[in-house]
Length: 270
Image (cartoon, rainbow, N blue to C red; front, side):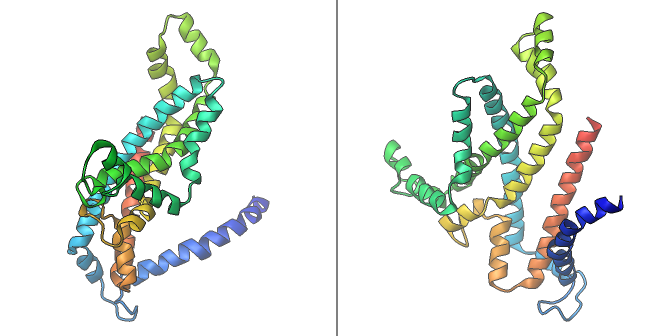
């Protein structure tokens, strides 16, 4: 036990110094004024909840998460199952799915502008004159970008889960007359439940990182449908509104923790 503690100590020290202590200071600052001197109680939280930009960003972030997570989990699972059936070309397709993760953000931004600009390829192909990033389509462009960026990561995780299912189980089921869909719903899905929890949580956390591309394309104040919490925090940081920023960060962290715990509890009941 003591030897194990010494092995964990370097990592634990780093987590305490660079994660827990800074976050504790953020929590402390959320109850003080912008200079961190005068105690103001819950006034910062009241200000944040009455802020229209915060309500808009929170609503868009929840909508973005609710749309993206089911889509990403479903599409990535389908892609992983199809890839598992591929024999010769499977490795090539796996590499193709991982390409978006290796592309630098600056290149992705150029791709966005090339596709979705008013004079971009998409408008040229369909003879349209839509400013995609400044219309009601902006939200769906952001959804597409998130799916494209994270699909390969989830596919690899699904493939790892599929590799852990013994082929003998499928062979026994086929001997008993089970078809492909029966095997999928009765064998594949039940055995993938641990992977499903992990992939859902990671996809949920990654959905809060869908900011850099949108920021570089649309700036500090994009179309209102894609104005997320990350935009709001970035603007508050630039304005040095550290009191509101600290309170908003605590609210955001509490919401993420609550959703993850609820998801875990639902999985444990299953």
